Structure formats: structure tokens, C-alpha cells
Length: 242
Image (cartoon, rainbow, N blue to C red; front, side):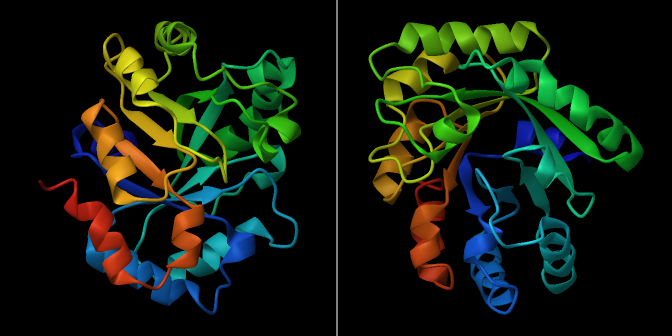
């Protein structure tokens, strides 16, 4: 079964977002064990940029030490690696930078063809009222928090273009998650799996996003503070079972 097919059938749940620059390979096995034991099934690997870590080496070693499927969430074509189980092929639909609408995709396509792994076409939508690292790196602006109709129209465009996944992101370290109004607006018209990330610190915030229609919520910065705590992850997974 492909990861996309599994995601289409999976119940709502958190997804761990790993930044390899912030999690050494010496400590990764313990963190992965805590996540797996709490109910984790997949992890995203990525960030706006990797300053020090060689992504291929990190992912290859991670796959040797823990039975956790890794899905690449690339910040640029420099992050492409065959040492993952699948890759999100991001279409930055909220911006108007041509490089992230088609340029980077043309650069990546020959590598992806040679790799032969699972590629998941993903409509990526940045939202919020503050500029985060991802906005600076991508040279795009987010959709403002009072414009759910724009988020809805953007997600619809991605669906009609044949995308298989919608990812709404407030950016790493955002002061708050994307609003439930955004999620509900997209869920009311688009049947694709819906990932929501950025600014999610507490289980109740995740619960609100699930209530509005999210399939997955991405936990990144919050997990960095409690990466080895099974109870941390159990709190997030428990809200999915209520």
C-alpha cells in the first residue's frame, strides 16, 4: 500500500515533523521509540533549510535505527534524497513566485524519475499574519487570517489541477495554528486528505483542527522540547480516540 493510500484511509492523527538539524542521530532512536509507542505511524522530515546536516546521510541512518516511515517535506531541491519512503511534491499555490509554482518542479523531476519512489503531489498553502522563515526563503506572502475564501479557492484550484493532498501551514514557530475557519472552508469543498501545520503547541489546539476537518496535524517545534516523552505524544493521540 502506498503512503498516500494509507493516508486516505487513516483516522485523524498527529504527524511528527523532524528537523534533522535539531535532532542528532545519537538521540533519534529514543525519540522515534516514544512516538511509535504512543501510536505514531509516519514522520515528516524537513524544514525551510538545513544548515549543517547532510539530509541523505541522516535519513539513511534513521531508517536503519527505527521502523518509522519517513516522508520528505522539502524546503528546496537541495533537500532531495532517495533515503526516504515518500516525498511531498509541493506546489506553493498561495504564492506567486514562479520558482515554486513550476521552476523547482522541473529541476526535481529528473531526480524523482530516477529515484522511482512515491511522490505525492501536494497543494501547499501558507497562511497567517506574520512572516516566518518559510515565507522569507520562498519569497512569498501568506494568505491573511481573515481570508478563508482565498484559502478555499486556492485549495479548490489545487484539487482541480490534480493534486492529491492539501497542506495548510502557518509556518514553523507561528504564534498560533491556522484557524478552524480555514480548515472548515477547505473541508467543505475538497475531499482530499488535509494536513495542517504551524503553531500547534497543545492537544486542545489539535483537537479543534480535527473538529473542523483536518486529517493530520503537524507537530514540530513543540515536539523538539519533548522528543523523548511518550506521554507527550500520548496526549496528542488520545484526542484522536475520543
